[in-house]
Image 1 (cartoon, helix red, strand yellow):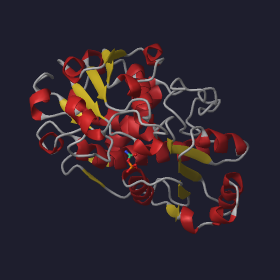
Image 2: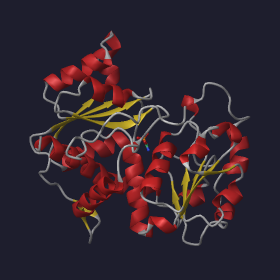
Image 3: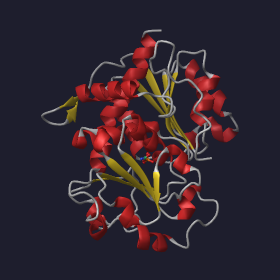
Length: 326
Ligand code: CP
């Protein structure tokens, strides 16, 4: 199931514009570079600050998070506010979902309130695609903010944008993605984005039980040991154990995992001297990453969060622009 079955749905309209952001599969490098260019324009280069602009004035953005989130929820909310949109953040536990209302009925009620963009996180793979299909004839856009083990496209875009700030040229890069690949929507979206941007080599590193059997079909090299997996890497993307998605024990214990896969200062010496250490968060210190590495000179983990605001602003502005031109 690691190979996506939700790729067919069109997220690009007949004019080549982004209608929804559902997955990285189905995007193209030109669109990604346009999103990056717009993010560049939103950041003040002197202070690295992001100022408020009226690009989404008179638009309404609704955040629907059926799963916990710190970074994605708040940065989408901040992004929409910095674009001057009206923002609704639905508290799912206090919504009529708990009284049995279906997801599509909730969505249709929000559309009746003239919401323009729905940002959706859900534990089930394919939820954002399902909503996009159900509202296909309406001028409303859906952003997938993470659906089960499937996709997290805005995270992949902000990860690629962060790499671009430091490395400029993807074609020379060796990128190692380390940890629980099997349950990771971030791994799948990042592999796809790295291919679209022409990365030289993509590696996945982890125990056999946490690497999908069919993953080589995605054009990656598989390693089961950390040291060879990160040897001469330009970028290391660490992933946490996603225990909330594990239905059976995939590992003897987190301690066992950390013994073999924790990125420590000693292990980091195998990578290139200017390696970037990334993590989508939340980080589990002392399990997949040593504190000294997470907080160290190679880490861009908090920069990913900061740049995520500009990238998410750019995604929302791109969707609003395509709505305005239809
Ligand atoms: N990276 C990420 O999706 O973090 P949150 O779960 O906090 O949104």
